[in-house]
Amino acid sequence: MLITGGAGFVGSNLALRLLAAGADVTVVDSLIPEYGGNLFNLAPAGSAVRLNVSDVRDPFSLQQLVAGQDFLFNLAGQNSHLDAMEDPATDLDINCRAQLSILEACRRVNPEVRVVFASTRQIYGRPRYLPVDEAHPLHPVDVNGIHKLAGEAYHLLYARVYGLRACSLRLTNTIGPRMRIKDARQTFVGSWIRALLEGRPIEVWGGRQLRDLNDVEDVVDAFLLAAQSPAAIGQAYNLGADPPISLQALAEMMIELHGRGEYRIREFPENRARIDIGDYHGSFAAIRAELGWTPRHSLRETLQRTLGYFAANLAHYV
Amino acid sequence: MLITGGAGFVGSNLALRLLAAGADVTVVDSLIPEYGGNLFNLAPAGSAVRLNVSDVRDPFSLQQLVAGQDFLFNLAGQNSHLDAMEDPATDLDINCRAQLSILEACRRVNPEVRVVFASTRQIYGRPRYLPVDEAHPLHPVDVNGIHKLAGEAYHLLYARVYGLRACSLRLTNTIGPRMRIKDARQTFVGSWIRALLEGRPIEVWGGRQLRDLNDVEDVVDAFLLAAQSPAAIGQAYNLGADPPISLQALAEMMIELHGRGEYRIREFPENRARIDIGDYHGSFAAIRAELGWTPRHSLRETLQRTLGYFAANLAHYV
Image 1 (spheres, chains in turn orange, brown):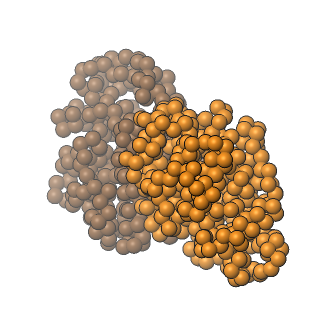
Image 2 (cartoon, chains in turn green, red; image 1 turned 180 degrees about the vertical axis):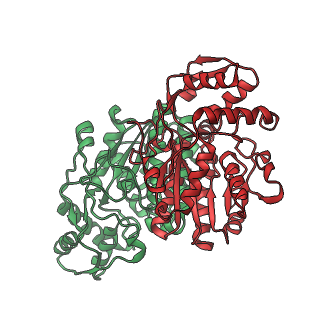
Image 3 (tube, chains in turn purple, green; image 1 turned 90 degrees about the vertical axis):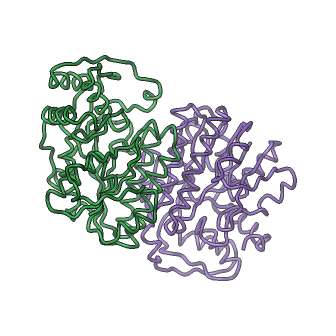
């Protein structure tokens, strides 16, 4: 199986799980410093994992790598909302152009491959009702969301039109070992973990907004279920967690688990306020009913394990 | 004012109307043979129109051309559903990358410009109810529709986030003088007109599907209203016509107006059936209520004028 973005946060956790189960895993990652890829994430695998450093924007290497795979976990992407607003053309190349060339490669050289695409709750934009289900209108509020929406739409289109066995998972905030904590490019939680471990106050923008958070191990479960279920083909499913939590309550829980620390409530910076979505809480009723997925890890347990991981490995992530 | 795609069907009719009203008009068109641009479309303007042959994929020329304009009518696009499925990367460049660079140019060199984007009913995909209003889910069924949706979303996003005075019109099938009739790349009606004038039978795929058709002069009215109304900024409006007509009834009306001809009902070719949307009928209640737009031309009158135009000018269009 092939994992694009496989040195990143979710990709590396997925790779390690698959390797532990005896799978033959190839990881593609560009290792661009601003993105999620980090070789240390794959260190536990040693030489068991085949690492191919290349960029999904390179259509030629992708065609070679897709050939002969049973599964493609398609997780490579540019995920920073602010970077996408600053440089929309690069975001377009990674989140649209590269996705098209990956799908064209599948269609031409490996039409039987099972594909699971990592989409995002961001494609809904500002929620009109909660919890957000898959029928919610798709009105992304930033360039990154527009491109992620196109990326998912390609996958569902290639399933419908060409019979490609592809599906999509719409991830909400995901946390766990191996996440990017250097900055807030991947999630705000990453930068909070770093602040806490470095003894700086957590900066909470706003504070009352609700979010749901998934443990990366639960997300890995969802990828494995989606890859194997015939019912998933052509579908897009929300992940999600119950209950949602306010940012302020989350900061307090993290400080309590860490045993020390403080947070400061701050006004939204102007460039973030313009693309903020307010409260978010996703319904995962569809994937629970159709694929039997449900989150197994509590938020407290996930935060504790995550803080422990980064306390032990901080130097590799900052 | 600047009109991208201004040698094309809607663009040239808009340019001629504006020139007649005394406007200072620059037309940008790539004149790529497979697209809608045709120099003959602008012949009535003589030297009154400033023609700049360049491709909207060229970010440098666009930046020069956008500077100093009061209005930008943004109509350049790749519109063939089948070409987009065959070559998705080219469609992405024209309908997404170029749109981003046009909007970036506006934001940087001309943030006060009024922008009207030519979107399409295609972004709705297969209708879930009729008539389709602007709240209908956006689920395009082909690559071209995915990219048009992104193109529109950029415009609305730049309005919301950067205060750009942009809006979008979702065109349905548009007919009139200066449309592309060489083939079915722009509309099926174009290829029907050509067949009729060349004495060949009209090929009607299916036949019972409903469509609504707008006269290009009515569409030009909508662009002018949208460009001038403060209420339109940040909005996307359907155009449309009442009542819709079946393809078979349309073929019969065209033959009657032409005074001769025949049609043949054919099965859908497989590559079209996969991306067909069934019946379509759009609601234009929003633009009627907010901008006062309503179609003024009957379908019969439009068809008669259009057939007369192409009978007189056939050699310039085939």
